[in-house]
Amino acid sequence: MNKNDCMIKIYNEGRSICEFTEAVRVLERYICPPLSSAGVNIEEYAKKLFSQSEILMLQKEADIIGISAFYANDKRGRAYLSFFAVEKHLEGRGYGKKLLRFSEERAKALGMNKMCLEVSDLNQNAIGFYRKMGYVVSQRASEHSCFMEKIFGKGKREYV
Image (cartoon, rainbow, N blue to C red; front, side):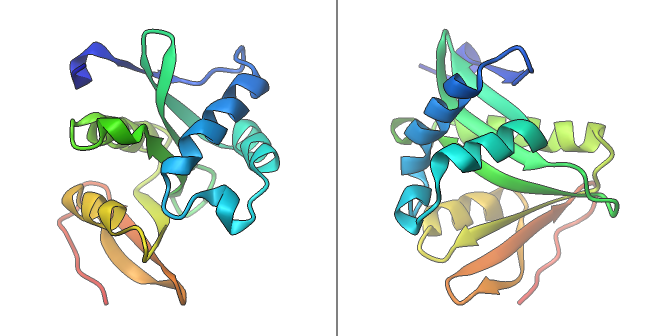
């Protein structure tokens, strides 16, 4: 399987909340730490994403192999990436890169000028991935996580 044999689709309203919830349930286990282990109610979380965020699906034939969900309703132009996961066995093959770039382009098309996200300090693979994609740590979010951001159309900035 290569990244060119899949497609990214905007998850439209004609799709089922049940199908989306199941995809989130399957993919969230690839997030470090998994959302469910942190006490997140996956059904409620998926319902909120489904009703309020922009959802992009990475599909291989009929299978959902990745999801990106971000909020694009900030008046200051900040999109907030709330859920991003690709099946673990596809790591390092360019699928995540393709999905994140498409997400950024979609956010720009919606008038956003920046993408922000929160990532656990335990998830060093994700932090490295986001850095390679041009994100920088902007501030601490909590004792165990940080905020990262990428300003669209600007050079890289480093933060502490």
